[in-house]
Amino acid sequence: MDTKIGSLDTCKPSCNDLACPANGLVSTIQSSVSPSSIVNPSESTLGRHLARRLVQVGVTDVFSVPGDFNLTLLDHLIAEPGLNLIGCCNELNAGYAADGYARSRGVGACVVTFTVGGLSVLNAIAGAYSENLPLICIVGGPNSNDYGTNRILHHTIGLPDFSQELRCFQTVTCFQAVVNNLEDAHELIDTAISTSLKESKPVYISIGCNLPAIPHPTFSREPVPFALSPKLGLEAAVEATAEFLNKAVKPVLVGGPKLRVAQASDAFVELADACGYALAVMPSAKGLVPEHHPHFIGTYWGAVSTAFCAEIVESADAYLFAGPIFNDYSSVGYSLLLKKEKAIILQPDRVVIANGPAFGCVLMKDFLRALSKRLKRNTTAYDNYHRIYVPEGIPLKCEPKEALRVNVLFQHIQKMLSGETAVIAETGDSWFNCQKLKLPKGCGYEFQMQYGSIGWSVGATLGYAQAVPEKRVIACIGDGSFQVCGVIIRCLKTIIFLINNGGYTIEVEIHDGPYNVIKNWNYTGLVDAIHNGEGKCWTKKVRCEEELIEAIEEATGPKKDCLCFIEIIVHRDDTSKELLEWGSRVSAANSRPPNPQ
Image (cartoon, rainbow, N blue to C red):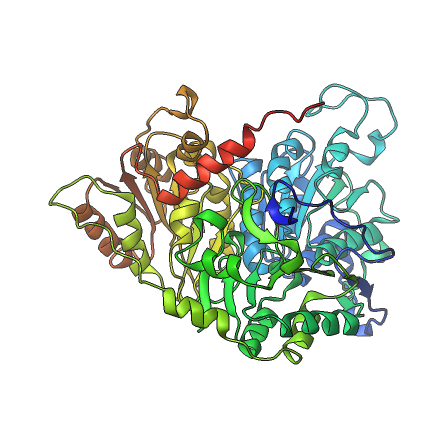
């Protein structure tokens, strides 16, 4: 039997190379500090040091929920000139906002209170971990004098053990720092932040509530710049890969979501330019590779790929996947028709060629750039795609005042896209409808596929919009998801399309039941009530194409500087054909009977 990738009979992964850093990076901190970098004594406190460290790594906005354990820390964060504190209505949304911010800025941060806030933000941190996002989660912790006293504190589960929150965070962060004295605070904070940047994962920093305002000699100098230096060893990997691909007749390239972690999107495009291969992306990598590239053929997603893409990828005799994640969702219920002996799997720090060999401690970015100089140009796969490609049809024209269809909605959203916009797609049918949008040069795109947390986009839209205020963010959110996390009034000039179909449509297509029907809300009325006349907010309820056209004209014209909330009323069963296919395959994978004992 052939060994397949993304199928039920995939082989167990080979052992990792020894002594290899998680992504081939070694964090170093420079040692020289100029005499002019002395900090004003009144500002040489733990709180101001943490604030300066955040600003230095690129965080200018921190998403927070106040609680009595973090209030003094918040005072010192607010006092930092380069830092803007954004209050959120709950910890989960603060975490989601930091997630969205990190997707655009490269790192995000949130601040919550001890345990009752920490456990609330935990789901968002887990999502950031699954998506490989550097996110600094800061918790205002207990008074340093209370550790080891056997006292019971409020905001906890009533035990004198303060480690419950820490234990929960250990599985969804790559480093945990509990700062309950000033002597090692500087080192713990620096190690946490540098580890987050190095590993591209969240970290946890707990700061004793009585410590932020206290000066200490280690905080009297400006923070020393972070520097990340690569550890290289790639010549053998490049040589073996070039030999493999240069023998192929119709090789293809497929970009995966870990291109972001490796900061290798530009290098991947350079490789595509040099070799001429057909270029596709996995669904969770949409937006990481320019879709205006001359050899771009669409999204490879097995049976629900964009038109003609799967046929080209799966018929290739060699495919290089750069930074893939093969899970049950991305493999459409483990049904991909890929063979391991044809594949080169490139991860941020590792290359595996077919069934072997494997090369560790190889940086993806350097590997791709070196490989681009060694490959022979081969356009066969793209030429085949060009020959068989037939342009997609357009939705049937609506009759006057006919109930609006989802495919018509996305036809109009497509026309709104430009280099000055970005798309946020919520978990659900928006995954599939937004995947079919053709992104113009410079248009951003984000969705959370690995973790798939319903409601993620609500907070993430706030964070993303805050990180790139020059872009008009267009968020496509289902009614079920909005009910989970639906308070997002401070989203600058964002356009939110709330798709109201009366339930959890993605769950319906996997396994239907009465639990997938939700109580209908007056969404525009809710947003108006929360807005309460403060700031710029405009709402509209849409039931037909004529109303949609009017709403878009208003949102992109007179209301272009407002948060525009457009509720789209559609039929419960109005779904994309891709969701119907995907749902049935995922359902089949979920319902496999136990293996015989």
